[in-house]
Every structure is written in structure tokens, then in C-alpha cells.
Length: 193
Image 1 (cartoon, rainbow, N blue to C red):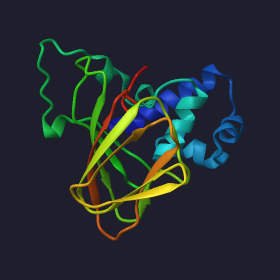
Image 2: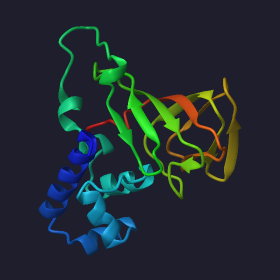
Image 3: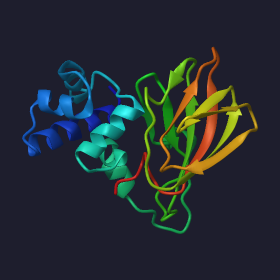
Image 4: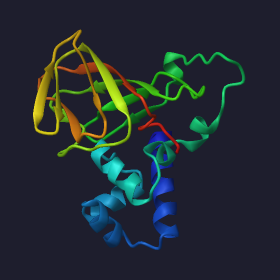
């Protein structure tokens, strides 16, 4: 089990116990079965991004708070922050979508990430919304970005910008991996606010 998955499992148990919620109560609140919540809490199942957001909302914390608080609370000692490829913090969600932080906390005010979508994957069954604006650039593969009731199909080199407050989700419906660079104007996935 990787460190981020262990951190998520531990933090989830702590938060659920602090709020005195049973597995059944928590499952009902986030729309999952108790057995799936138990598997996430034991570090045996990676939640989808949609589920991770529901959990964060339930406990009124950011997704980053659930993942690896120590990394995100360490501030850079100088005005430069170099993140080596092997040092990137990553989150692997259900469906094996990988979100990797390209920047370190240097009061950037935004979140700079690279996202890898395996074939036939999506960020969840339904759209989600959060504060800010996001801009994505597709590097390889094909993606569909669903914003409210519209679908935008991206090919390599295409970019898209939209308000994150509109319900949205991203899908790779092809048989090949897709890779994109994304910026959230307000830290969202790796935020600890």
C-alpha cells in the first residue's frame, strides 16, 4: 500500500471517529456502500475523484488534507522550489487516474498538475464543482470534458478553460492513455485548506 493511500485511510478513520459516525452513516452521506467505505478506510480501495470530493465535503476539509498533510504544510526554505520527477506527490484514484503535483507550495496560489487517464476512465459518474477557474492542455490521447450539459472533445494540443463552479467531469473514452497538464486557479486536489 502506498503512503498516500495509507494517509487517506488513517485520516478517514480519524475523521469518522471524531464525528462519531458509523460506517453505515458515512456511507449513506457520501452515497457509497458500507463495505466500500470500509475498504477505503482500510487502504484496500482507491476512491474515485468524485468519491474523494464527497468525503472531503462531508468532513469540511480539502482533498489534500485527506492525502498527505505533512508534505503540503512544509514550506520552501528559499524563493525557488524544485520538484524532481521522482519526488512528485501523486494521487491514484479509482480507475487508476493519476494526479501528480508539478509545483510545491511556494504560495503559488494555484495548483499545477499533470493528469494521466488510462483507457476508458473518468473522474466519476457525475460532475463536481469547486471554487476557481481551471485550464487544461491535452498532451497526448483524447479527452472529453463535460461541463454542465455540454461535451468538449480535446485532441493533443487543444486547451480548455472554464469556471470550476460549473459541474464538470473528464472522461477518456478511447483505448489509449491520455495525458494532460492542468492548472486550478485555486488549489483543489492538493490543497490543505
